[in-house]
Amino acid sequence: MDRYRTDTNSPAVIIGAGPAGLTAGYELFKLGHPSVILEADEMVGGISRTVNYQGYRFDIGGHRFFSKVPYVNDLWHEILQDDFILRPRLSRIHYKGHFFDYPLKAMNALAGLGPYEAMMVMLSYLRAKAIPYNGGSEDNFEQWVANRFGYRLYSIFFKTYTEKVWGIPCHEISADWAAQRIKNLSLKRAIYNALVGSAKSMNGEVITTLIEQFHYPRLGPGMMWERCAELLEAQGSPTVFGQPVQQIYHHNGRVTAIKALNRRGEATEITGREFISTMPLRELIFSLSPAPPDKVLQAAHNLRYRDYLTVVLVIDRENVFPDNWIYIHTPEVKLGRIQNYKNWSAAMVPDTSKTALGLEYFLWEQDAEWKWPDERLIETGIRECVQIGLIRPGEVLDGTVVRMKKAYPVYDNYYHRSLAIIRRYLEQFSNLQTIGRNGLHRYNNQDHSMMTGVYAARNIFGETNDVWSVNIEQEYHEESRPESSASGERLVPMRPRDHAPEPQHTFDEIVEEAYAGQVVEELFARLDTLAMGIAVGTVSGLICAIGILLLFYHPANMPELSGLTRETLGLDPDWVKIVIGITGASGAGFLLGSSMSLVRNCLIKFYLGFTRKRVEASQTQAL
Image 1 (cartoon, rainbow, N blue to C red):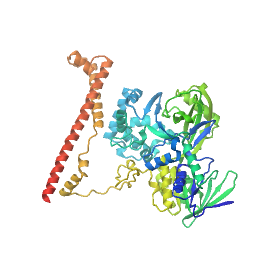
Image 2: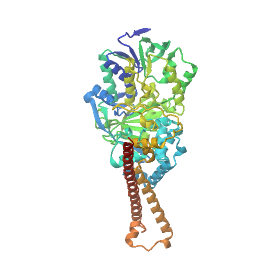
Image 3: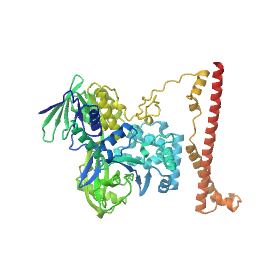
Image 4: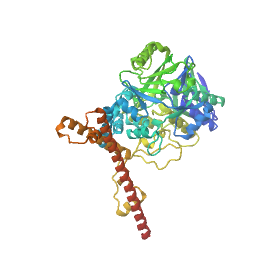
């Protein structure tokens, strides 16, 4: 057995050369301390790698480079410099023969759904706002999304695709995943975005789900991490490939050594002072020696991971579709998402007259499709692309398949319990930190994984950052109210507290709190003018439609009206005029509802200003 010992000037051994592990190594380098990185595969990047097949480059799933954290953006630009390019985003949803723009475009969605379905979607949304599903309880993905978008829109645009990705029913997926990935997007905010053309919410905050441009490495995301590994190698922090970890030895609450086994079966033992792991938590727990208690082993066994494969097709056509990617919500095909790599960067293809498409399938390793030969998977991909009308069979020149195990940690309804057990057990190790998507069993974006690496590196040298707090933002837990956040720092609120009885306020306390704006905002909450306009407009349109139907079925009750009035109200037996009448009623209702809420908000604002002046005068007089 070969032995590799890190000295006091090389205190960190890092398991995994993905974004988290390499960022940890890079941060250590910036702090003046080298490291050694063990990578089980033969290339860096983890799921953010870029594969090269016959000169055609492709991702393991598309990776946008966008972050709210300035430090992460600075790192990206520092590593790649001029090779970090800005790209426009274009993505759509394919559902039953129609393409829907994503983010939402009002007229496009209306045209795809049709007037009836659009009206039913809005009624479903209003119903969810008035009477939340399951009494407002949001224990799973289905409840969380239905309460924000309405059940009808959830069933069209969320249910099918989500169940393709995770392979389990939506009511078995934890609400945490929706809160983390969809974040502060709602139907109201999506409509606001469609009307004003902004990826920001009404309070000016960027909605990550709706960003319309992003940075991207010229040769794919793997270029970022290949360059990072090269920089580290040049500074004495090597990445050792083909070294899957077999055992992690520990004694008295400290990790002492790691044993890795290369493809030839040769073992290497690495000792060190500090250890950082991006391994899947399940594999980490199983590799510990001595073994953890049975309760911890069972918790690790209960953690699940979704596997992924991409079928890459080389198409003999210059332009297949303009999107970066398309979500396939159509339930008749197993295909989940299609990437058009040339639209991410023109340099991703060697011949601009050709196009490379990545067809993404989400599977369990035990699924039959996972074991299919590449030829059968390529045939399936071609057939499904033809079925949804994207290509013709004779256009396919070549194809290949890439599989990625444990691509996505699964957020089922039981993972919380298992994760808590594992986390408590790992806290006993003073020199071991777990980071990254699989190291925390958290569906982090790339920037979140990088920040866990930055925090872990700084912890080695005296800081006390909680790597588990990354990607726990305020919008994920609306009950939380962080005290403050410096610019560029990620909000880390406290967990929602159990609801304790509210203390009784005296009149003087109520006046003081009202002046401070703490109670008044609860008593006189601002009405949303857009939501009120949509609600009144929808009801007005429905009343008009019902009235017209009643008059048509009972013509004897139709009043004697002038031709102009009848035409305006849509009472003539002309469908165009009927639609105009209903639309006019909806528009008038929208204007009425939004105007009423606007006037009400102005009056309340005036009243509160007047009241505050009285409070100020009273307090001044008392003084």
